[in-house]
Image 1 (cartoon, rainbow, N blue to C red):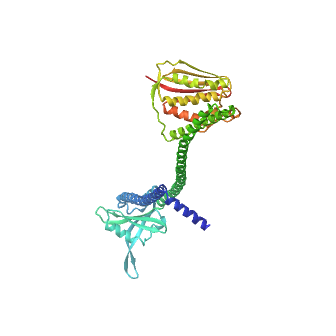
Image 2 (image 1 turned 30 degrees about the horizontal axis):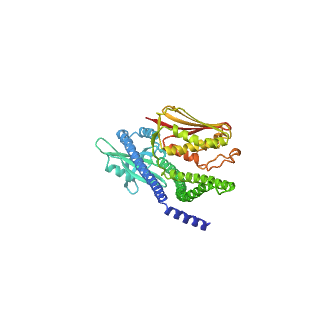
Image 3 (image 1 turned 90 degrees about the horizontal axis):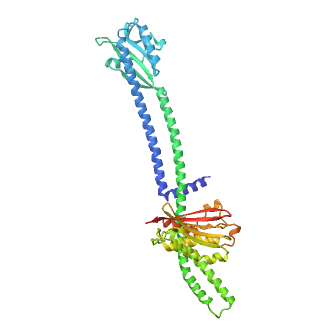
Amino acid sequence: MFSFLNLNFKKGIKKVSSSTQLIYTIIVALLIVGSFIFMAERFVGIANDAQERLINVRIGSLQDAFVSFAADKIEDPIYLNKKIDEIISTNETIKNFKVIVKGTNIDHQTNTNTIVYNVIASNNKDEIGTVDTEVSFLFNLASGDPTHSVTVALNDGSERLFKTTRAITDVNGNVLGAVVTTQTLSLADIAIKSSITNSRILLFVILALIMLLFFRLSKIIDYMDLYKKLKEVDQLKDDFVSMASHELRTPLSIIRGYADFMKDAPELSPESKDYVSKINFSTKELDSLVTDMLDVSRIQQGRMSFEFVKTNPNSLIEEVTNSLVLPAKEKGLNISFDKSGVKDTQYINVDVSRLKQALINIIGNAVKYTKKGEVTVRTYEEKGRLFIRCSDTGIGMSEEERTKLFEKFYRIKNDETVGIRGTGLGLWITAQIIKQMNGNLSVESIKGVGSHFIVSFPLVN
């Protein structure tokens, strides 16, 4: 068990030391806890001081009020006791309130006089008429400063007490007696103790939250490290794809050149020419794949260049449509282009070669995924935008397939697409190209009915 804890502790130390963010988090956590403890202790000290001052001020005011009439009623203990009872009933912190007068006790055997302090009024009825043997010090303090209350702090076990005394004087300033009160701070201490307990509970909750945040941050940092590594791997992959694609272009071009040269050679047999034709077809597909991979690399690295010109797209769309007439006829499809919805004087700002690349992908896919019926391309203007709509009567798509259609490497896989080849990059590249030309690409489709791909660009003057 110890070795397990020690191992994990060492791992934790290593992880913290390798991450400045974790170190900052720990420092912040310690500062928060330290500040909280400091403020809690300061609060307790301030609360104690304030409570003591409040009690002293209040008892001083009570004694001032009491001595103002006590001198005239010093010979009337019943009246004084009544007033003491009234004071005690409204002040729960006063534990004892009594009136002391100084007297002498004559010892007839020794014929000596002893000074005594007699209790003539008190909230404790048992001590009325008795001699208080512990009050001489307080009585002398009061006599030394008869115009002010004097307080002495005491401890009775765990209970904090204040004893306050004030001289009772006549109009000439002669000391007739003293009023002595004992105040308890137990209620204040209970309230403060309760506040301290609540503060400790709150501190524990804060510590728990900090620990949760700490572990959460630790996980986030792990994810950040993992993200950085994945990003580096992804960058290496992109660099490799870009390099490999570039390196493949040259041998592919050579193979295609020789294939084109050989297919017209008269000395080849029909069977050999068929082989050459298949080689040529495969190299074209491979060249298309290499082109797609290069485009993906350029788009992800932000290196795809655009040369924007103001152009009317009708002639370009017609050119792309005408280039796909033969593949369409081979499948028994009718392909057409309706340009009546856009005037020749209406223009969009695009890169012509990139737009052609996107249209070849869109219209070519319509031909590829349509088994019977027709493919129709038309242009029209609406709300200041030029729309290019490519409609087909092909296999269509479900809602789930449609939402994933423009994701990288996504291809619809079902019984109807088994024989159709592709990489799943064409539409992703097309969507990125159109987006970077300030255009928009959307699709409408019904499974088994067909699809409509809509490209739109803002018209320019």
